[in-house]
Image 1 (cartoon, rainbow, N blue to C red):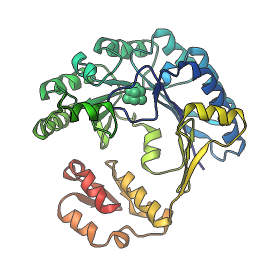
Image 2 (image 1 turned 180 degrees about the vertical axis):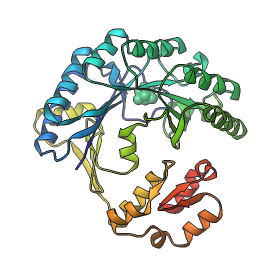
Image 3 (image 1 turned 90 degrees about the vertical axis):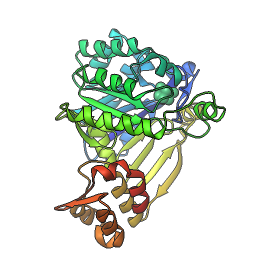
Length: 376
Ligand code: SF4
């Protein structure tokens, strides 16, 4: 049974040019109804019976920090009323600069949130403007400082490399600024151009250019060098933490363990079966108001399919996957399932075995997509 809960809040002030998430701007009028609907779905999920108390709760989006203080109080009130939660549970919320102030952070503290993931993306105004973020670098700094003043001592910030106009030097400055801000966790993503986004169309029309491969390689080298000199440790392809500050919610996800998903477009996972709610926030509200189910699709994975998925996701983490755990969970032997592929990946220095664990080497992490394609 799940010990993790994800709640999706699909509202944003404006849509960033690269964003393909299930998020919408201009739907402020729906926020109140949406929170009501989420409260109803919390009750429905909890009423099915909870075998394990929640160890992690993650409110993501979209921009959950866009909710008013009253809406946040109702949301977290429902979570704590409906679910049993462990005393040391990790309760995370995604917050975007430009939607938070001191009072909002104080509300979040009172709601029991003990971890914030702040969507900084860049500390450079030109880079922020190029991807359509609503905030300035100064607002991002201010958001981090305000969160710390409000008492948050488990802060993560997201940064993106490979942004239009970004240079190796400005990426280095971004990282140095992040490392100077006394945060506990860093998520470092490379910009990906998603289909049908304004970013894709701007690139196709030649209006903007992304850094070339050599520049990206230089940025990656800077990341490795600066992080190695810091007290952050990489624990997943894109994630770094000070000791004791790995994101427990995401580790549960990368282990392909069960979790509840509540909200529009949210996914629940149970015993390898995945249920996805409908994407439209408006329809989600209508269905819950009419006491109708909100599930849009259900995917039931075969045993070996689920095994392979667990391997792919687990290899994202530096500790890799345990052949013993896989055997216990699926009754399948890692080396028998993959046969010669594993030998070849090890011979190419992309994959390595240490006792019962297989994990990606440094080279393997750089070519992770190729390795995963072999193992999927
Ligand atoms: S803030 Fe996040 S979810 Fe919202 S549009 Fe930007 S990238 Fe998408």
